[in-house]
Structure formats: C-alpha cells, structure tokens
Amino acid sequence: MKLKIRIASRKSKLALCQVEILKSYFDLGIETEILEVITSGDQILNKSLSEIGGKGLFIKELEKFILDGSADIAVHSMKDMETEIAQNTVHSMKDMETEIAQNTTISAVLPRGDRSDVLLGKYSTLDDLPYNAVIGTSSVRRAAFTKSYRPDLVIKLLRGNVETRIQKLEDGLFDAIILAKAGLDRLKINVGKQIPSDIMPPAATQGAIAIQSTTNRNNKYEKDLNNYLFNINDNETYFETLAERSLLKTLDGSCRSPISASAYIIENDRLKLYGAIARLDGTKVVKSEIVGLKKDAVLLGKNLGTEILSKANGEIIYK
Image: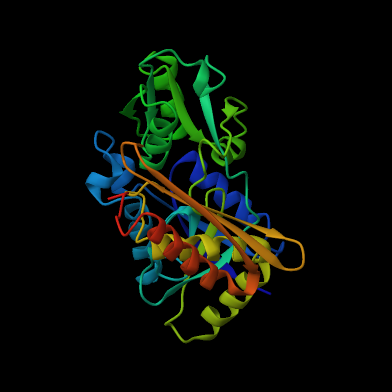
C-alpha cells in the first residue's frame, strides 16, 4: 500500500524513540513525516501535572494537529491518555486519560514494553533507603504507594524528561527517583532496580504505545490508513489495555489519582485484571482482582472497579 503518514509526536527523545518503534512496523513503501511538538506540559516544569491539567495535557495538544489535518496520526504513551480520547493519534498508552477527543480513535496499540517501575540511585530497594530519605517523582500513584510502604519517606516533585530527571538525581537533589522501566529500556538506559509489583503496582496501560487517528473525514485515505493501522495492532496488548482503561474509567481516575490497573492474558483466552486505589498520603489502600474472558475486557474492568469501590465502603479514597 502506498501511504504517506504524517505523525504528531512530542519532541522528547523518548517520544521520538516511540515513533521509531511504530515505524518499524510499517511496510518499506510507507513514507513518513514527523511533526515534533513541544507541549505546555514539556515547558512548565515547576508545577505538578495535576496543577496544569494532568497528563491529558500532552495528549490534547497532539490531538489538535490530527483534528485540524496537520497530521494523520498521533503517537502517545498510553498511560498519559484519558479514558476517552480523540481518535487516530499515537501515544504511550499509560499517558492517555479515559476520555479522548471526539472524532478520533485509538487505531492501534503496539506490543507492550515492561510495565514495572524502577528505583534509581545508590540504594537497591525502598527498604535500603535511610529514614526520611527524599524520593523524586511526578506520579501521585508512585508517591502514594511509596508512602504506603515507607511512610517516613519524603516525596518531592520531579519533572522533566528522563535525562533531566537522572541528572537531578546525580546532582544530589534526591536520594532516589522512580521511573518507568519501559521508558528506560526504549532509551537504552540500563540503570535502576525493579520495584516489586506488590509494593509498586503499575499504572494502567504503562509500557503501551497507542496510535490515535481521526474517524470523521469520510475519505478513502482515512479509511485505508485506519485499516492499515488495525493490521499492526497487537491483540494481547489491546485487550489488556482495554480492561485497564475500563477499570480506570469506572474509578473516575486520571493521572491525578493514585490508581493501579494491570491486566494479563492467561490460558484459554482468559484475562486476569488487578486493581488498586490509594489515599494520596498512602494511609489506605484497597486492592482486588478479577478473571474472565478477554472478550469481556470492558465488563471486567467495570465489575472490578465497582468491587473496589464497594470495598472502600463508598469512600472515594483517592480524591
């Protein structure tokens, strides 16, 4: 198929690495043009993401380019996406909130990277950190589950790209920092020790890359493009992230809420979904899990979310 695909992406080294990963799935005849975008979230680094609009801010500013026709797709870290999104853009799936722009869709997700978090610094585990050690993170989930495990640890805001965050650690501003392993792997940065998932349960869709595209142009190019993207969609990652985003939406969660969701395809086309919510200060955590058919991924997410809220006795503990 002869296509030229214009790709909207954040300008960070990690985001552009994810574009290259996407391009590796394209046929040799596909031409590409990359539109590199510096978002407000990339520029405002002295405030938490929750203060400036959440991780969805990264997504919304890329969505504009596909909606106005400047780009054909957007690439995202899916965990940055809201649970509803504009269609036909590319994101790291963990960056996507549960709501996306109207007239867009998640047209494909790529095979998932490592979904775990890692501890960087001279200490190998959270247990090794001294009393009142300072931990750098911009994630309310990482902060809450860290405080749940070690209430004495001091959490301080850490923003910027991966390289900037590591430099701040090396400058002595923190005793340790916590980053996503998938991002480090993609940048070929081999540092840090994995934090066990029972201590630091992963974010919904962490490690997944999502492609977002439009659905309202009603022309042959859009139809051909979306069909082409559908054919590179990774089926296993698709159902895992579908369940996780359904759970996130049921819990009314975003990057401003300490929520974990992690699904795995198991034998006989079944899916196991883990979920957890926490107070911002880590003083209360509610966890549960569910197993069912992967084709019922959305329903499983809804049912598990309802169960977790029931276990919390109706108290929205993560607000």
